[in-house]
Image (cartoon, rainbow, N blue to C red; front, side):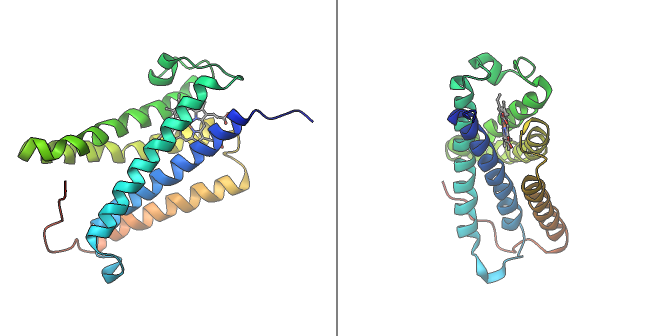
Amino acid sequence: MTEIPWTWLAIRASGITAWGLLTAVVLWGILLRTRLLGRLASPMRLLDLHRWLGATALAFLLIHMILLLVDPAVKFTVAQLLIPGLAPWQPLAVSLGIIAFWLLIPVSIMGRLRPRLGKVGNTWFKQSHLIAYAAWPFATAHYVLAGTDALSEWSIALIIAGSALLVFGLLARGFVPAPAPARPVRS
Ligand code: HEM
């Protein structure tokens, strides 16, 4: 039996975990702006979870990328990891992942800087948030095009379930009013 390199399995596992967490971050962000869960979850708890999911998604994404540097099958350089179009394997599919990665960076930086920047920090944080939401479609296109297992039954079921939850959340956001009191802002 041919041996499957552990790095290849780990790249796939970390990629799928990062995608699942990214989907959950977007969903929690949407839930935060609606009264959908009512008293089941306070805005503060939802915000904490949203932040935790965001940080964990980024951690798995970094693992996904760093493993590509040590994978013996297709050797990536740091430049190929960070610059769209340079990848030695499936450049279009990989570029979509790299774009998703860069779209997540401003919100991660602004989350840290926001408390020190006052009013302008709030504006930049909101703008960087909108940019971060755009990462999801890029990450999903990357998953579908780059994934070895992307078109297997379980993977299609996962992608459909994640997408359906987001569509449901977005519809709810349109129909369920946002909480009346000001949103909690904690540093
Ligand atoms: C938010 C960003 C990203 C997410 C959510 C993500 C997620 C995924 C997922 C789910 C897979 C499919 C695993 C499988 O079923 O085989 C995958 C594959 C892959 N990703 Fe990413 N990825 C992201 C960014 C990146 C970046 C920045 C790179 C680096 C250049 C990258 C390189 C790759 C490669 C080379 C594969 C193919 C692995 C294989 O199946 O052999 N990804 N990614």
